[in-house]
Length: 351
Ligand code: CP3
Image 1: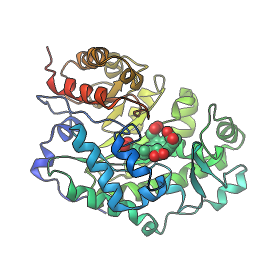
Image 2: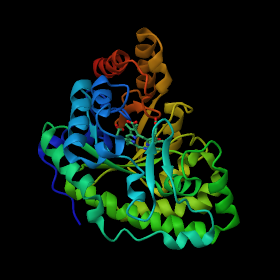
Image 3: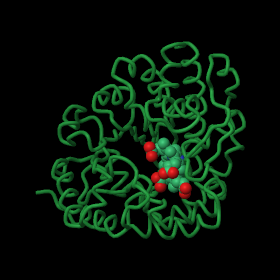
Image 4: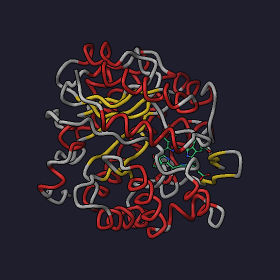
């Protein structure tokens, strides 16, 4: 499997340059969940179709992705999909219940349940994702990179075991401690599926691949090193080498070096760390993405702008900074503040 060659317009875009740690005149910015419920255009469409219908329609997914990227004027678009879609073809019964978030009706609860996790040997079952990638790529401006993505295996395993969101991940972690062998098999199967899934997104037209390890911060460093890092290392090693990879997590202050060692050209930072200190710890071999607290967008515009500048001051014009929030935009975020943030990033020049 291979990725189509990068056009010069894409290769020279500020976002791709930052992924390669090359200098930029202006810091590139995009926002996790930039297409979502905070946007009236999205809510209008969602009044007519369910979330899964939206994900499964390449035309609608294209409309949502492109509308958000163009309305915001960001430097990258992200495929409209969800990290949990991969669970369907490998044997899970997934529902996005109204007001409840994602629900998996047949979660893994015992070691023997891992046997029913299927290999992802019919990638056509997610053809709607690959079609969306190709259609988004051709609808976007030729110089705007497209990010494909997947959930990281630990975060997917949490959903598969808990059966939905969770506060403490007690079912997933208890399973891991009680039955490390079965947990390892589950993680390996998730890695196998994710490698195929991401490489096919790259082949279909995604320039960059992001792994969302949203819940990995629930682990301490020893558990990360034992239960997660070997799987993440294999995953990154098996991704299409031409596509830069972004390694994202939250609450990862104690895990950053381990995550960097596992892989990724760009490491995601949330707002709980100081960007300059975290980047010093990571060293010059990686780019970083982050790290404004998404809640700041609920404050006054002057504060949004001031805090945005503070993050940029921390990066201090070092090559390889991609501006983003530390986690996704929340549903009631005022759109005007999002636009102010992007304007502030684009007007900023390092001192
Ligand atoms: O960033 C983007 O704009 C691209 C699309 C995207 C979505 N989900 C759309 C979505 C991406 C990259 C994701 C990733 C995702 N999904 C993650 C990792 C990122 C993170 O936030 O930590 C996780 C953990 C999920 C699982 C998931 N999907 C949850 C917990 C929920 C419910 C959240 C909620 O606020 O209700 C979803 C649903 C979801 N995924 C929505 C969107 C726009 C809201 C669905 C709706 O319209 O009702």
